[in-house]
Length: 181
Ligand SMILES: Cc1cc2nc3c(=O)[nH]c(=O)nc-3n(C[C@H](O)[C@H](O)[C@H](O)COP(=O)(O)O)c2cc1C
Image 1 (cartoon, helix red, strand yellow):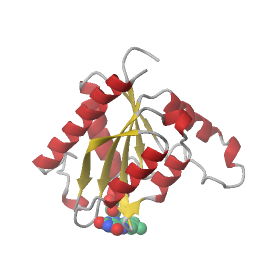
Image 2 (cartoon, protein in one colour):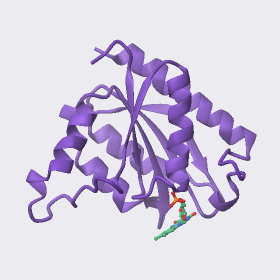
Image 3 (cartoon, rainbow, N blue to C red):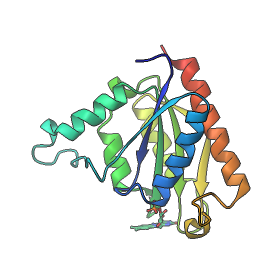
Image 4 (cartoon, protein in one colour):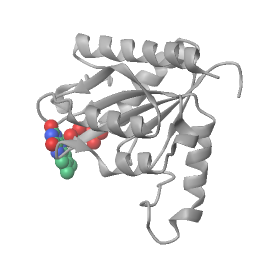
């Protein structure tokens, strides 16, 4: 590992050209501005098999995903809310991570919703991250009514949401620096 902390983004969709892909892009760019290295897993390019699926244990994408996690100091998760919880893509991604990849590392959480704001997905990801011994930042971001959330340039329309993203980026970077062994 180099001198700076590395933040890994994990998206709850296959397509990074999605609202959650954009949320990760915004947040990781703020982390970069604060001196962190950033990297993002692209499920579209390198899909992870379902845990338990035939042949999954030897899948090269899984090994690369886990290695990327080992080499990262912090994680940012961004998932759409599906039926009141995180997407299957996000849950399956977390199922491929064990405490040996994530223990003692910071997690930052974001979620987007078609409807009104809810903390369900954030809370469910918080439980899963805790299960793999992550330190979840208290700052978090929910983006309600996601179709109206971005302007034509892909920037967040709501100032308060944008401020929450900045606060989350600062928390992830500062706490990852403190916790890094
Ligand atoms: C299967 C499915 C279930 C959904 N369930 C919810 C829901 O429970 N609450 C909600 O506000 N939006 C729900 N939505 C809307 C998504 O949250 C919304 O399309 C998503 O946040 C957009 O993000 P994306 O562009 O990254 O996919 C659902 C969408 C799908 C496809």
